[in-house]
Length: 320
Ligand SMILES: Nc1nc2c(ncn2[C@@H]2O[C@H](COP(=O)(O)OP(=O)(O)OP(=O)(O)O)[C@@H](O)[C@H]2O)c(=O)[nH]1
Ligand SMILES: [Mg+2]
Figure (cartoon, protein in one colour):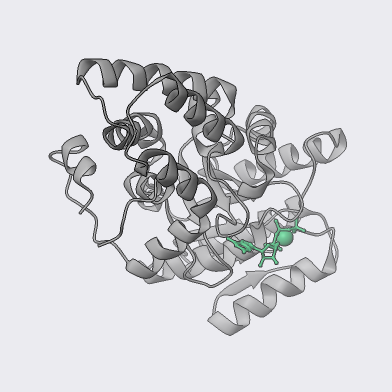
């Protein structure tokens, strides 16, 4: 399929692509993709102006200064080594540089290591935590795993209802309490999962800003209490990031990681106005595996992050 990928990843089997998914991802990243297609497609030569224009596109696509500088230095090296002269050749070289940067983030989440495997979600308000839980429940069920949800957002009654409605519709048990704190709800859920031999627990939490010190302390306590219910849990702390928040996603990653030890990221809303580059900024400044990316509100719109797909969508490579 993508010529550069075969070269880059010789020995790695190509993943079967889903045209619907790739199409959505590509449409989502079209703001950045179209600019790059125009830049490299004009039939020009590689010159300083081309590098400058590329630099502008990368910075304005949320790649950030650090990662942009890193990518451009790497690109200049490749162009020199391979004696490239045409703008069109530079596109493949950029794809290669992006792959080197992003590939290490593409680590699939393996829930087979513990039973129950406890996943705690965190993130700022509205990032997509609760809807991602619904999509993830479906994803894990599709792998033949049993799932239990913990309605750990006890700040908003609507959040509990949102999760319970979803659970009823999809035949998934949701542990919730009318009152009580998040730690208590999730503690109960983990115990229930142990008793029922459930494979995966997905624990929702309330959205919070990293500047709200008391709320950051509260979520640290939630994590400690989960460890009391099941020593070693949570096995995954997933930070959900809205891709539209640009460089803020990077500062959120740093702050939540410092507080909780984030082990995986979910990048949502890549179908909106997102430019997608923040993933490169995270890869450079604070790398944490990107477990899933979201391109819409449908149940099937959250999938594992595959670096090859992302890079080819970002650079506007054609689907076949
Ligand atoms: N377009 C689009 N919308 C999404 C995506 N993921 C989530 N959303 C929407 O974003 C909105 C917020 O999602 P929630 O799941 O409620 O976010 P949350 O993080 O749980 O929010 P709080 O609990 O308020 O902190 C909802 O309208 C979702 O449908 C996505 O990948 N694409
Ligand atoms: Mg929520």
